Length: 273
Image (cartoon, rainbow, N blue to C red):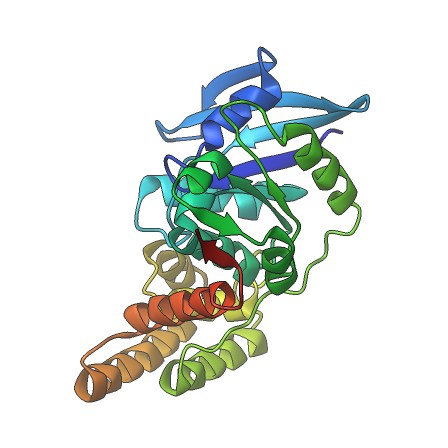
């Protein structure tokens, strides 16, 4: 069976351009089951070795706020591709790495295609690729999808990386209040093996705190009483954050993710010429 590589990234990151570069005429377009979102799939041959390439819908996040996000996430969870090639716009690094971080939180094997390097260059942005790779703990390959530059190196890196694809999921702090609630919810999830066949307990706990509609519905259906208990913990921390900091868990989680990204970028990753 062919190994599956999912291409994922923000809208306008050059993802579909890269997909077309990789698959050429060896592609077909259908729809994801039950929805009208287009499914593009193709074949890339690397040294005689066939790889199935799927172009996921462009998304900014993996929280189920839009149909595209649900489709992309469902594919990752249900189809379990061997690797995600995350197309990151080099000229807009901070915003694009927000999605990268969420793949890492899920424990999904990721290789970064640092795309639009030409655009970054014309804007005077210089990126230390090795430093970025080291700080993220992920392979990073510079590309210009428009011209096909870096395509071969990217796919060679993917082929090598597939062999050791069992990354430790990224666990970051979201501040004391959220961390405490997260730990409490995670413990209860583990104790009851709640949704653990498909999702990490910590990730499910995060989704409860983010009030992720799809996970909440699934949880309510799977174990209504436990789901209610978890929702009460979320409500309690939400009320507390609202009263003390005039914020709520989803906003705190997003802020701390961006804080984590900023701390990486500040360590000599970007130089402006």
